[in-house]
Image 1 (cartoon, rainbow, N blue to C red):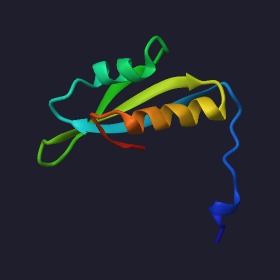
Image 2 (cartoon, helix red, strand yellow; image 1 turned 60 degrees about the vertical axis):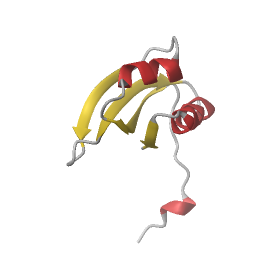
Image 3 (cartoon, helix red, strand yellow; image 1 turned 30 degrees about the horizontal axis):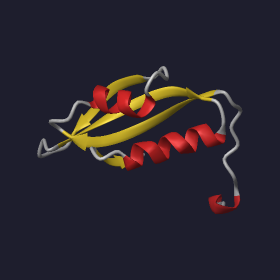
Image 4 (cartoon, one colour; image 1 turned 90 degrees about the horizontal axis):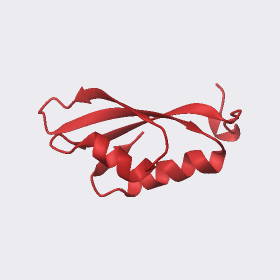
Length: 87
């Protein structure tokens, strides 16, 4: 079995990157993404709604220019008050 903890993710930048976020069903995902990404080009698409209908997940795709760029957006998404989870 390969131990993936010993391998670092190697990406060639710039590259397309996707995040998936989970938010309350009644929140506006486009508005939330605009708050996080501001003027940065990004695409938002609906993914799923939870079984009980309380949450929705959205896919976000954008071009990241470095590892720092990619991880900083992950951090900003995770810190947003209306985002429950970032994948």
